[in-house]
Image (cartoon, rainbow over all chains, first blue to last red; front, side, top):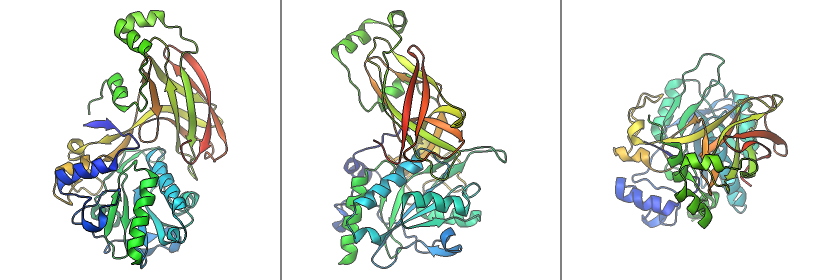
Length: 209
Length: 196
């Protein structure tokens, strides 16, 4: 079953459909105003850590600093369509957040293509989009597998000979993680940046209280 | 995986479908053969909103997007595109597709794990925007008479491969588009971070 992926879709309808279909709802007390997808029970990812290429490959746990949010995305820099679309939308969403809220959000991109995404490439790529980000890269398959499994990420590297170009199919969800390592909301590919800003505002307000 | 009829796919993906009364009449009154003979090819295709996504640090590939309108009286199709070799080594027509749950469950992931496991519900992978996204080349992008087809993020795009240099914001790229009936059309894509 294949179908095209329109960029802007009604997220409320998505939530309602999901709620009915798989027990994923958008209507629990604290999350009723969120535009993304809220999973019940939520994913817990605090036990997962990945090396940050920006910080001497220090193992970095998948949770935000206290009172902040971490946006975790799995992709690759040679991805010409899906990844820059999402990262640009996140970038716009962060720009639209009022200070000091925006300084309480960090983006973490994990490469699913460590073969081509060297530390330097990944860092330079992320610096184009964000003032502050984690460049997560591991060459240990088991480490990447553990992380993708925890988030429910799928990816598939196209067969290729050394030196040939190739694509990596991957899910393109952005996971919003709080300071306990809980995925509080998930943004499907194509979600409008204004909806992202709305979710961040809601969640950061809640973190503050 | 089966490939859908391109025309049908276009209908399902088209963002702006403008069916004028005239176009509707034309569509109803002519089959594709007769339409082809009456097509005045030059200049009937209109291309707007052309832009290329910046490719920071990356020379592997970059995507070009645009809106193509066909006010003419016959269906047409974008069949190829090219750029100067000083920009990119190869140009292809692509589309990004979402692979639904039925396909995803038969697919081997890198981790070797079933793609959906969190809730134990197999329908999860088919949530819009959460599926496995992959790109595939297409032979042609059909632009039916009287309609507008958007090449946009997450859908159809023109892929520049083997870039000579990364595309930087502020630069522009000239492309030659080739339409099946409308012939060649030269357009300029501004390099941008976000859609115009």
